[in-house]
Structure formats: C-alpha cells, structure tokens
Amino acid sequence: MLAPGSRIEKLKMKTLNTILVLTLGILSTSEVWSAETVCFESIKGRTEIVQSQNEEGAPNVECSDTTGAVLWWGDPFTGTTPMGEMNVDADYSNAEAVVRPREEKVLLLPLCSINCHEGTFPPPPADKNPRELWMHTEIVSSLQLQHGRGGMWCLDCHHPTQRNKLIDNFGNQISLNQPQKLCGKCHGPIFRDWRDGIHGKRIGEWASDGKKRWFVCTECHDPHDIQQGTRNSGFAQIQPELAPKLPKGMTEATH
Image (cartoon, rainbow, N blue to C red):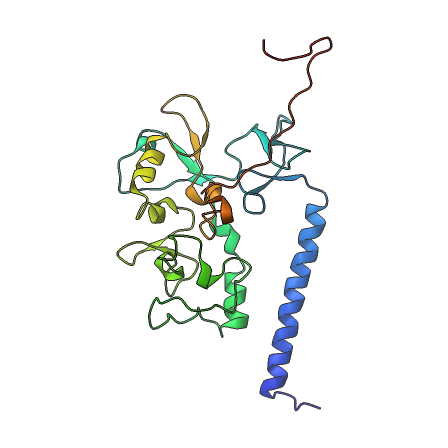
C-alpha cells in the first residue's frame, strides 16, 4: 500500500489523469468523425478537411469515394485566415491572401508539456549534433532525417526552447502557419517561384487582385521525409482517379 501523498502515488494519479483525458478526447473525436465525411487535400494523414455545407446548401469540398482526396472545392476559404504581413514584395502584396492554419495541429503540446516535462518545454541541448530521440519516432527518425541528405537536424528548423515554433537564420520564431519563411532560408529559387505564383497551388478568385487561398510548403511536402523514401522526390504521389467511362457506342477517346 502506497502512502497517501507520496511521490509515487502522485505520479500514479497524474498518469491516470492523463490517460483519462486522452481517452475522453479520442472517444469524443471518434463520435464526431463517425458522422462526418473527411478527405485530404494534398497529403493523406496530414491535410484532412471535413466536408460541410454553406447556407445555400453547397459543399465546401467534394470528396472522392475512390481515393479519399478532394476532387474540387466549392468554398476554397473554409477555415482560412489572412496570410499576414511579410517583409518581402510578392504577388500577394496586391491581393487578399489567406492560408489554412497549421498551428491547430499541435494543440496537444501544452498537455505534453505538463505531463511529460514538468510544466515546461524541454531544455535546449548543449549543441545541435544529432542524437537519438526517444519520443516522436512516429514522425521522424532523428538519426536518419531525410532532409538535407544528412546535413540537417531538428533544431535547424525548430526553435530550441519553443518547440511549437520554427526558427529563422537570426533565431527569431516563425509560426507553423508561415513555413515558407523557414523553407526560403535554403530554397531561395523555389521560394521566389512560389511568391510569383509559378510553384505550388492557389485556389479562389480568378482576378489578379482577388482573394486567393495559398497552399504553404508543408501542405504539399513532408519536411521529415522530403525524399519520399526511395522515390527521391519531394512530392508524394497521389493515387489517380479512374478514367471516366466512354459514352455508349464509343470505343476510344482520341477525339
């Protein structure tokens, strides 16, 4: 029998409370998902969006029953926020640019901080030399990071003390909603093309000064496995839709 108030007893209760919170969260989430249609925009498992309807009854997205991907957008601005101020002149300087927030993907960080790190973020390591991580292995193998071909490690991109932020060349924090500021540190030509609208994806109004949703880097590229294994390609293949059936009486589609 453990003495009431002992360190082990407190740790035991703390662990049980954590399990209870996570279990209730999973159960409540599964109840919601069971009644919703969910598909992905660019990367399966990373860019999911819930199908909904606007006041006119039109869907925000149409989901594919074959691939689970978005077929088309009825409302490209669902759940978006303004891109924000940037210190570079680009195409979005003359138009209303919005992005889908990414920071909501890390809402568990405060919970992890309280239950695993005694209420604080992990302390910064003594140096940036790669070391084996005991956590987050489902996201990346720290000693086999497929980005930079062995020339990078976690803290080249993530802030050393505020782990839910990225970092620029001067040590300033970068929001996860603005990963292009980080990627542009190394990928200058691609960043320039993205700003000019000839790399990446945009949806929204056709007018050059109209409102558009910009897809940011991490919506199409997985920064922890940028080479996609043996494919050596920065963009994951998306399963294509089946070819449409030919109209009755047609035998080929060279028309």
